[in-house]
Amino acid sequence: MSSSSDDHDTAANDKLRHPAPDVIDQRQQQIDPAGTHRADVNPPSAAGMKQPGGAGGGGLAQSRRGDAPSYPRPPFPEQTQPLPGSFAAMEPRPDHGETSWHGSGRLQRRVALITGGDSGIGRAVAIAYAREGADVAISYLSETEDAKDTERLILECGQQCLLLPGDISDPAHCRAIVADVVEEFGRIDILVNNAAHQQTFDAIDEITDSEWQRTFAVNIHAMFYLAKAAVPHMKKGGSIINTASINSDQPSPALLAYAATKGAIQNFTMGLAQMLADQEIRVNCVAPGPVWTPLIPGSFDGEKVSQFGANYPMQRPAQPVELASAYVMLAEPMSSYVSGATIAVTGGKPMI
Image (cartoon, rainbow, N blue to C red):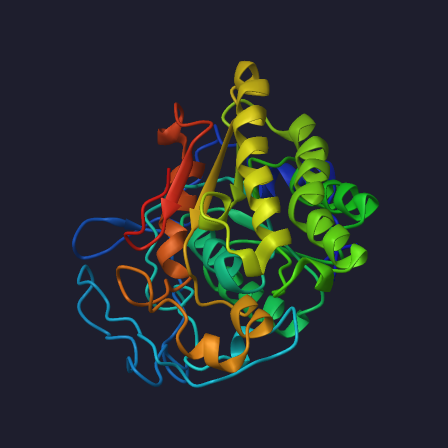
């Protein structure tokens, strides 16, 4: 199922290319003038890259490292696009950390599989993981252009990337992509179940049986298939991170099917964390509030898109990169006692 054109190496070469976490490998570490370690040996150039900006908020402020960036606020230009959508067509363009995420080696020698890693939160997590020293496999539906661009950024870090196109609503495909990752890298240290499907409806009789079933198949059934397939290849210290939503706690009626799956994800996470505790494999979830991703113009009408995030305390949606730190924290070895948790990234809106 892999779209990678590289031939598989022999087992001996795999050990050289993909050393186990206990093998010292400092190939990605670089000392900067301040004395800190950075994983982004070849950080992408900002030249020619369209930065977040647009109506209501302007572009991302390129301030000194460590300063808080200034992100766009609504109103945004009215816009729609067909699902699954592309970040390249959004205005303002989302910030996934292309020029703003600087790694420090927190995930050295790890192997991560990220679903929905071509755009949105998944792309931001993929970039962050690579700059923290991890090799990354990206599962995506059909957005090859977005996936290739994410791959480019990962390779520029000196890390390896495996692209895995296909539909995770198919149990066989879920098992196949796990097998592809294990064949390529020898193991899985981090599984990020992030891909999601959503549509809005004003009344329950508008939701077809097939739409309801697809939402559950992509959002929660695939999570089970992937975790079941991956766990046998995860060692002590492995981490599974599931993307839930504020809708798991405060469901929007217009997102009835989607919100129901997000509630199930949170419950699944807590149960699986207990089931895998004796193997010291941690399971957590991140519950985002409004995030500026292709799902938004793909799911809502132009008027709602223009005001997206305005009703939250920070009066704007999150940029995908603002979620990445939660996923890095949950994946890194120093979070070894964090399991069964939900990290709410909601811009100040409370979650129970």
